Length: 321
Image 1 (cartoon, one colour):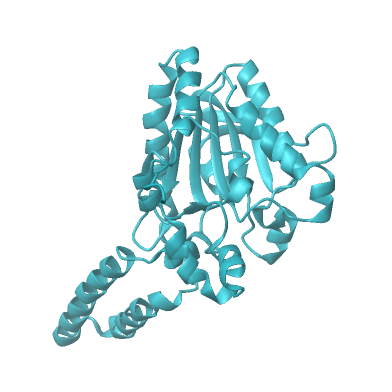
Image 2 (spheres, rainbow, N blue to C red):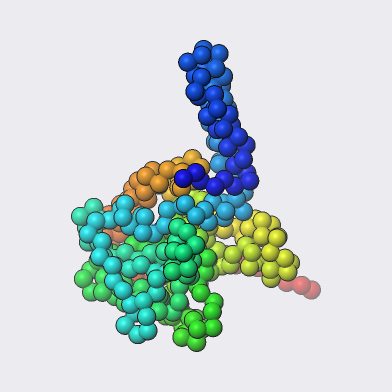
């Protein structure tokens, strides 16, 4: 199935179409030479386009329906995956998958926010927007992992926590706040990987970690660009402008000290070459997991708390006379 292109990819698609039309006659030396020149032009255009994406274009890339989701990464990176269901209080939130598996023969706890590949699956998964029971399920599984000294690996991909009335009635804000508090106390290493969207408390409710990794074309922020535009300008069409101001891209967040490392994506995004994306995520997790497992737990907890206390910079200007 062909991947739906974005507007900024249309010149690339046009070149690929020209090459495809010429390919049946590639035995002709003149045609073959023309194909070669078009392929060189195509490669240059791809590098130029994907190396200079705007923040809004990266947001669009993070939302691509064909982009690998949490269960795709779980299937590729872990063995012996066993899913756990329910929060033991209300229901099983399908927007969150949680369970246990092996990462390179090491038992680990795995938490991931799951979107759908199509409309039907997205409705079942609530578009990756968790309810309070999802956050409580996540903490239940994390506590089990802590009991058996299993490091925790978390995959974040959500447009935000579910804002419905039912979620609020069941304590959405409390569930998120409790998770943030309790994740600082978990006595096992925690690695967080932002694989797509990371919006607001929806992401932060399972986003406290010793190491925060972020895919090259993911985004992570207190609010979506559309939400910000609606508040500031009363116009969601200003989303591209708010994306610039929010500093939500991986390079911005690395510069601000919010994340620890950017995981590179294949040219064109993770959805163009999932296998390479999986390999890059696997290598990044392995790199940090080995380091974290060697740190004494009292030191690890101190480092985790200090990491978040250091985020943000306060600048004081001159006092007004």
